[in-house]
Amino acid sequence: MTTDEPVDLDERLRSAGYRVTGPRRAVWTALCQASGHVTAEQLSAQVTAAGQADQASVYRTLALFEELGLARQSRLGDADAARWEVAHPDEHFHLVCANCGDIDHHVGSLVSRIRDHLEGDHRFEVRDVELVVTGICARCRDDEATA
Image (tube, rainbow, N blue to C red):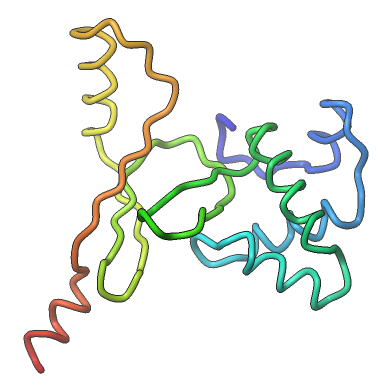
């Protein structure tokens, strides 16, 4: 996606030659309402509990949404499950707390500088930038300091 405008899911699916189905709408709604990055299992639990889709439909739908540029999948740790979020146009850092697992976005000019460096100095065609920084968040640091 290249804008911050709301997505017309029905239009995006139809224009790409896909049917609009209840399970696809349910997964989209759950993804849009999620606070932060969610696993496919979390989305599946939500939509299957409501009787809106089965687990296999959730996984297929997420893969389709990624293909259409509607959703982004990130691996935010070696052993962690993939996390999903609604696609957005900015490239950013994922700041992952190794203590509590909190995930924060950090948007800044450094990602574009890295992209420019790789493309200009190394003639490397960058298609996507996904930076994950693992550390301890401020809340956990404060908790450790007061303990």
